[in-house]
Amino acid sequence: MFDQRTDEYQDIRDAVRALCAEFPDEYHRKIDEARAYPAEFVDALTRAGWMAALIPEAYGGSGLGLTEASVIMEEINRSGGNSGACHGQMYVINTLIKHGSEAQKQHYLPRIATGEWRLQSMAVTEPTTGSDTTKIKTVAVKKGDRWVINGQKVWISRVLHSDLIIVLARTTPVEQCRKPSEGMSIFIVDAKAAQANGQLVVKPIPNMVNHETNELFFDNLEVPEENLIGTEGQGFKHLLSGLNAERVLIAAECIGDGYWFTDRVVKYVNERVVFGRPIGQNQGVQFPIAEAFIEVEAANLMRFKAAALYDADQPCGAEANMAKYLAAKSSWEAANACIQFHGGFGFANEYDVERKFRETRLYQVAPISTNMILGYVGQHVLGMPKSY
Amino acid sequence: MRILVPVKRVIDYNVKARVKADGSGVDLANVKMSMNPFDEIAVEEAIRLKEKGVAEEVIAVSIGVKQAAETLRTALAMGADRAILVTATDDVQQDIEPLAVAKILAAVAKAEGTELVIAGKQAIDNDMNATGQMLAALLGWAQATFASKLEIDGGKAKVTREVDGGLQTIAVALPAVVTADLRLNEPRYASLPNIMKAKKKPLEEKTAADYGVDVAPRLEVVSVREPEGRKAGIKVGSVDELVGKLKEAGVI
Ligand SMILES: Cc1cc2nc3c(=O)[nH]c(=O)nc-3n(C[C@H](O)[C@H](O)[C@H](O)COP(=O)(O)OP(=O)(O)OC[C@H]3O[C@@H](n4cnc5c(N)ncnc54)[C@H](O)[C@@H]3O)c2cc1C
Ligand SMILES: Cc1cc2nc3c(=O)[nH]c(=O)nc-3n(C[C@H](O)[C@H](O)[C@H](O)COP(=O)(O)OP(=O)(O)OC[C@H]3O[C@@H](n4cnc5c(N)ncnc54)[C@H](O)[C@@H]3O)c2cc1C
Image 1 (cartoon, each protein chain N blue to C red):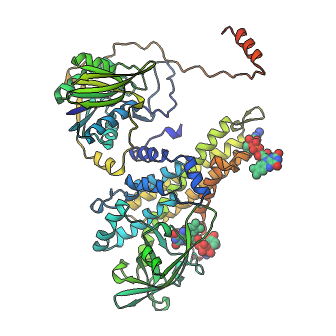
Image 2 (tube, rainbow over the protein chains, first blue to last red; image 1 turned 30 degrees about the horizontal axis):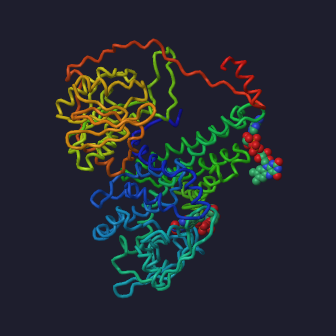
Image 3 (cartoon, chains in turn brown, red; image 1 turned 180 degrees about the vertical axis):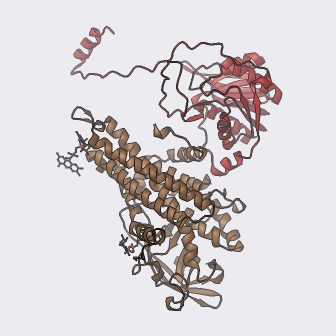
């Protein structure tokens, strides 16, 4: 049976599964119902070193590649948890590792590795510009040895559970730039201090999943100049390299979800008897499940391909985006099959299917919408005119 | 004190075992293998003794196919200091019998100057429950099997044993062989930094021939069968009907 397969990451899989097994379905269900943050779960993952997987050994992490990191995320979701509570650290940290100065890395990374500080929030999206990131209106202006940030963001996740957040702001007006993608910079912001002095206001947005996500208002937010990451004006480019990692990790989470759905539904349809036989004996039930499984498997291959390219420092934009596309689509197929063949029980909270169903649906929209991937592939891979 | 912990690579307890078509045994080709769960408990106990300062070193040893190196890495990731892999066969289907394993372990224990061996009470694949006992006999050491509690005090081990109908506490002089029962402890899971460290810990490779032990099977497996499937039950309406049905079935 497929769930008895092993691969070269079995040591990681076994250890993450063993940790996750201490947080059964019921734990995640209660957290979801209360719209609470799974602090104990995230703390346990942090203590066992999983959230520092990507941090180089010299800074207190384990220095693993994206492939291994993606396996960690996959196993969390496959165990019934939701990486959404903690994946931010994995994504965001890459920006700091790849583009941070030595002093920044020395200052932040060891404390993040131990869990003393959390850096798991990245503020990009804005209410009036959405997917059209280069049009962002948040600006940072240099005043003496500080940057002063003004503007507004929306859908910014885990701010209330982060000590540090990364903010994208325009530092040169778009008209003065050679390309719209230039003239933006990224800053690392002490979120707790900024909220305390009123320069950052955070308004939570009640939403469909248990995802702590917020509106942010920057009111003359002062940031020391040494908090600019990488090169001034190149912030968007710096973010993009991190975004490829994010795509691969999201793909892995969807793959974990996909296997969770197929595992659960296969078990259910083998046991549930109506019309005198297990419902899984009907092709109308069996085929959609098999189809979803095949799609998850195919997405899994693209995930490993993209991760291998990323780890080899090769261009991987197309593969990372395609992996995210395939994985989000397949987990959604699997989710649909799972809820459908649970009949009425799929809607009962105690089966956890409806919770996972909501959670995996997000990945068609965030962190990048499926349409934007199609647009990217149309233009950059296939050479059609830019459509967006 | 140096503790030796033998760990066996067995079919993972989550895997639904399948009998080979010729009835010669369970099919182990391309099946997920893991550390015998009782051995995980033994490793945990040894590490705890090291953490308490009672032991200086924990050595894990596995006897079988070369893939057992993975099982040893698991023990190292939990906290064992070093490992010894004794390759005794190339055939993943061959189970090395308790007597051969015990002979090799006796040689390792002597070579390493071990004072305490903590083993699992049995392996979940063949359920022999024999290796620890044979090892104690070969070494002429004391044995304390089915341990649910272990304390080392001076030259003695105080062991609570799970016996039929209750608990028995005995004291044995060291050196000794202790075998772990289910309730001795709850093994830890490996953390990522420890998995990384384990990759760098020493793993010495030996063969059964290095210890002059002949591992040729002495037992013959006549046949292996799957358990019979559970038959459907029936619902009864009353106690009288239940008693009637039980009488009919000839069980009362
Ligand atoms: C729970 C949640 C958490 C989030 N967390 C974060 C976070 O931590 N940080 C952050 O910066 N952002 C975050 N986001 C924002 C997310 O990245 C955006 O929602 C996403 O990029 C889409 O932007 P939008 O919502 O403005 O949609 P819009 O850009 O308004 O798009 C709406 C729809 O129109 C389609 N569309 C738009 N333009 C085109 C086009 N040219 N061609 C075809 N179709 C098009 C899109 O594909 C989409 O389906 C989060 C969102 C959610 C829901
Ligand atoms: C919110 C909610 C409100 C409800 N309200 C009411 C109510 O007021 N009154 C009431 O009586 N009921 C109510 N129901 C029950 C609802 O009608 C049943 O859930 C529905 O009929 C399916 O039955 P089931 O859940 O037992 O699924 P099952 O019969 O177990 O079926 C599970 C899945 O297997 C598929 N399947 C089963 N057999 C076959 C086959 N032979 N070939 C192909 N596919 C097959 C089904 O299509 C389904 O997708 C409600 C359910 C919900 C979720």
